[in-house]
Length: 68
Image 1 (cartoon, one colour):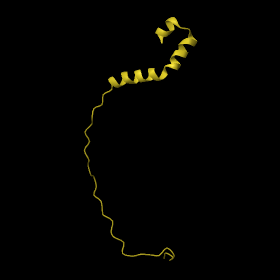
Image 2 (cartoon, one colour):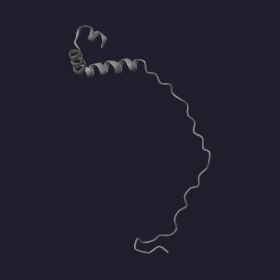
Image 3 (cartoon, helix red, strand yellow):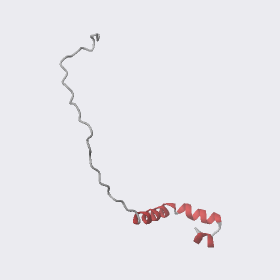
Image 4 (cartoon, helix red, strand yellow):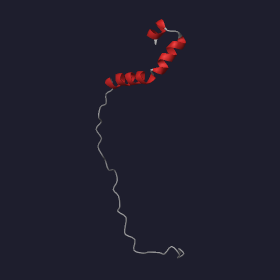
């Protein structure tokens, strides 16, 4: 912006920035991507408790029957 401010008025500078915002955003994103790093972490699953399998249901009921 300082470079544009050196030879453009405030209105002209805002107009240039507005018209080129996608290009500016792509360039900023490319610069950020070049400096991005990610370190993979190591995860290990740990089961602290067991589980009980569900038992099969040995009875049925009709939707029309009342529940006692």
